[in-house]
Picture 1 (tube, rainbow, N blue to C red):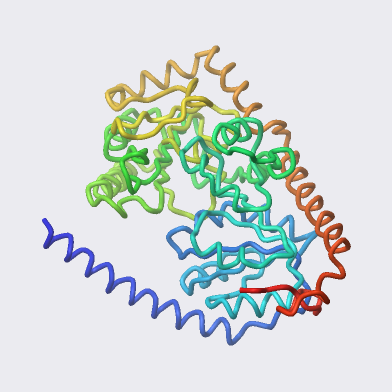
Picture 2 (cartoon, helix red, strand yellow):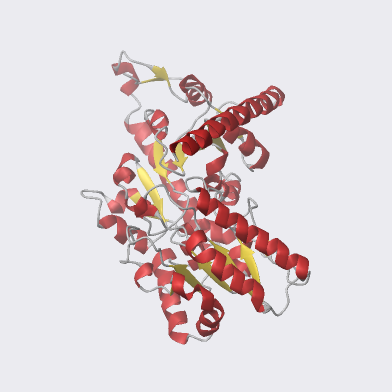
Length: 430
């Protein structure tokens, strides 16, 4: 077993090295062809220190950032070659490659960055957070009740944009001596304002079921993934019903930590292809595309794991079921929606058709869902979350102006310096 693990590791290292060289070559060409940024153009930046495997964390912010950039230009600060290449191909806002700390310092001096947004908790975030005189804001890459959402790392940032009352209550249980009124700003779910209604199939009388599992996790407490325990059986039953259309959207990291989980994922993908080959009118969908949103609004019902997908779906107000983890070590926060959700246990997957039929006519379940939507996201009227997102940015920019005025004379007092965004001397004793 150890020999097999060592062999897999060696193959992975070689593959990663090849991908890195390819990314470096592609990036070099793009950088040579890029027009330099106009000085002092950007006041808002998004910091991303990850590679392609975690690009989903950025993708869900593309449309909200594109709309934000219509008022305040936005730049993405990308730290890896592979991530930068992909961002340059996909991102609707400009991307700067800042591999080295000196690259960061250059763009800080060149631009007028006053707000830095962070979509995850990458340890390299601290290489950016060393720079003061700007607001560092955690915006996360989703809303959920996973233990990741309870981290004390929220305190490292000047501010956090959260979804709503449920997030505030969740954080209030673990963040001691944290000024929620000042530092935690509820904005709802701006992504929901941009969910597309275009679908890659011809709508008919089939019931559309979205199955969107997460990955297997890297430790027992986070083993929320259902592909191996629920997925094969439930997708098999749905494909055989003749009444359902499956949209299968697995997490991009599926199989990264557990080869058996990856194998189950491949079995589902193959089963969908075989079902479509047998009946072209079924139009089942294996979805690995970059766009998230159309799946959530198109599906009549969604089956999801404990992940941000629960809350992305919840923001639509449409029926969903949550897979119950099989591993007893998986930590489940039952103080919020998961205390009142429609659980799908592994033993129920063979009878998934009956479970979905019952859910479709369950009035009390619908009422509970509506109540939780309001608790998690507040006003979900189209455009409301976007307005709150923009208002939060405007508030922080106004606060930046206020503090800049209060500290206008500080530069002359310190012998330690870096150049600030306006060309004056800025304190840096590091």
